[in-house]
Image 1 (cartoon, helix red, strand yellow):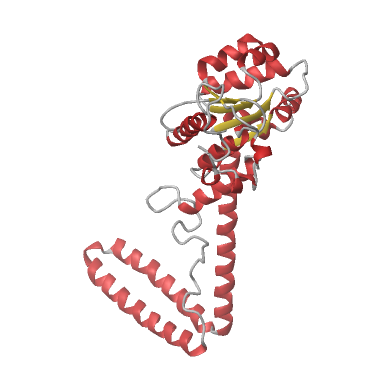
Image 2: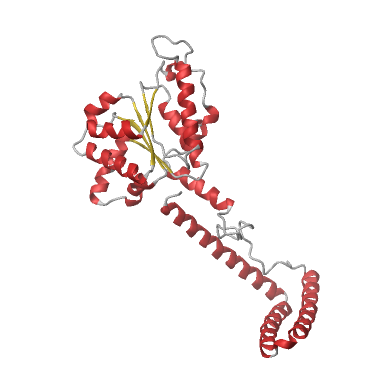
Length: 321
């Protein structure tokens, strides 16, 4: 489900496309009429005959077959005359057609069967990419470019090797995407810096955006900055997206400057989304005990109850690259 602001913008765009198609049609008709005035006379005559035909059938319904036959014969003669004039003067025969950008939905966003058109889906995906705050980042950070080569197959002091651990977490991330519409889940990725938490979140974001889901990525520092906007009613669309987007990704939780209202605002966002069953991903370098010290046990209890917790470990990938 996309946010209403994006959908409304797309519908407005379709409205403009239809206006443009109508304008070009009018220009095309005017061009033909100016070069062949008889064509305009024929079009007006055909419209007149159509209205007269309906009146005659209403007046004498028992003669409808006879009336329609005569009407079609007259129209055929006019069509033949018109076609001959257009060919002789080298004028386009489709001058009265609306030239829509999408021939499937005629720039309405809906197919004749009432389903959302593929062109609408593409516009929605583009809008979701723009709104996500991830931009071109997803061209590189996606499941196709994910590599396990940076994770050691040596167990060392860990319960499993970093390689095996990341394979398990990777599969959880894929399952999160595959079952997004059927199973409500949230995920917490934690571990030392440089282990791929943000990269993995971007992989999930791209996968879901490509399925027309609305995704908002925001660093924790930015999240708390806009808490002031929330207090004073500014930037309502941006604030609403934090609560309404299909997926909210909060990155680098715990690295922001500690401020008085941080805890209550974070809890409000998380709690509201939990109640609405809107999925979240939180990335942090802190473990649960450290999160509790900063954000209170009330917050971390929500995390423990409602998030799939994934610990990443191993060597800093940035140094390996």
